[in-house]
Image (tube, rainbow, N blue to C red; front, side, top):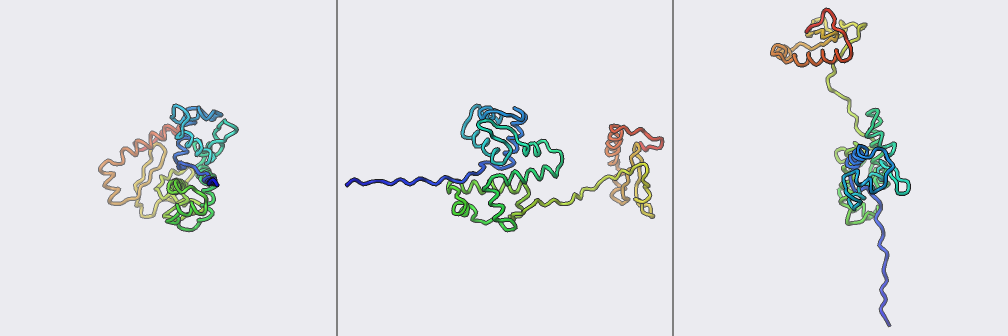
Length: 247
């Protein structure tokens, strides 16, 4: 009796983007500059991102852009999506951030990971969890962890090892130069003690709190370049020189 060999079909690994989201956005931007919005064939798209012909490396990048929702595919034709335009041709920072979050959650595997670990630390043994629970091929599980981690951090959804549902939009604490309108009383900004340096630069009020440090800086002439830039800005936006301007 002849021995018979039974071949078992190997389970196919779950789909995943092979490059991180920031890399995919960079290639999408490059493709936009080279070929426009599209549509274009996969071969032409490969050339647009720097490959002489369609290859494994080129195919991986194009597939990743599609996974993240940056490219729409109809048959064998690819076009840049509305989502991609919200990121590389943004009209507001808030919408760009929202689009990046949508993109990082577009791959089903990544969406499942965000849902699974939201509010929790990303497991140290995530690569093993990917193999056992998410049907990721063992040979690529470590790479998938790296791609997911880099993408989540870029989107602001992974901070200090904790998976979050939204990015931490910290309040901007950068000091602002207050430019009052003509009808606004500047006296409300000044303390009764008069502890400020006040300049009228081409119609723009510059107010600097008085201290030993600012006094020394002004004495040493460090304010000169700032004054030049403010006056240049005033000229650009069409403010005419007032009679009492400090030059």
